[in-house]
Every structure is written in structure tokens, then in C-alpha cells.
Length: 185
Image (cartoon, rainbow, N blue to C red):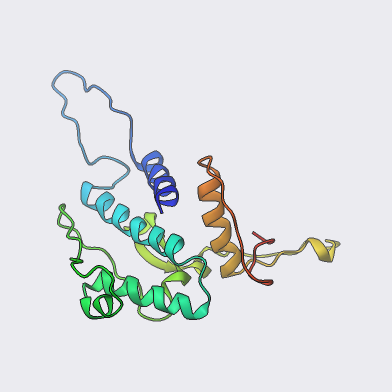
């Protein structure tokens, strides 16, 4: 969790935080002038990135049944519903995280699995489907068949997680059964 979370937070830092500049005499520094994001916006995004990282560290190597379980547990944490957590002996004293800046975290859509969603840092940490990241796909004439990779939610998701970690200099090991987009990623 720490490698992915650290990588995602570093990406946010590079995008939205400016180096400290000493203001000219008589000028005031706007602490929230980082590309239109306020402290509250950044706090929400960091909290959302934490939950995204939990999904992709604790729930990445699960099968379909395991993903349902991880999804239910994460939703229980986000909704502060302790019954499911206590049933399985998780976080008996878990209390929903309250944000200090007064913001609230957007809930993931109820339909589908959390694994099918990403946190969009450009939209205040809103959970969106991976399919939103699929760009138009065009196969140039004469392209050898064996080199064609059709973008899917799986390939887009895997490429994002892999690139995020590798671009920060961390190693990653991908495992899974045939047909799970390991090679295409």
C-alpha cells in the first residue's frame, strides 16, 4: 500500500504544489492557489488515494469472489458500517475518518466493484470507471495482427497501476491466470 500511495501522492504534489516563493514586500501569499485546489480539495484527494491504494494492495491478487469480499469490506469502512467488519473480525474499533478541512469524500458508485473504478484527481477525488480512460482506438492499415492490443478496462487499469509504481523507481511483480492482461500491460 505504501509504495502505490506514496507514488500517487508524489504525482499530486508535482501537479498541484508550487515551490515556496517569498512574496514581495506588501504582498500576501495565497496558501490555496495551487491550480485552483484548496486544502480541503487536497485532503479529500489524499484520503481517496489511500482507499484506492488499499483496494490495489489488499485486493489486487484476489479472484472474483475475493474481489466481492474486498469490495464489501472497503465499502463498509467508507460507510462506517461496522457489522460486516465485526463479523469477520476486522477493525473492531474502526471509526470513519473525518476530514479536518470540512470536506467529504465522494462515495464510489454502488453499482459494480470498487476494482472497476479509479480516483480522478482532476475532479475532486471522484470515483470513475476505468472505461472513462479508454481513448479512441484505431488500427493502422497493415498492422501485424500479433502486435494489436485492444484497450480494455483491464489493460488501462493495469497500465496505470504499473506505470505509477515503476515511474517512482519501485519494482512490481504481476501474477495471475492466463487472460488477465498481464502481457498486454
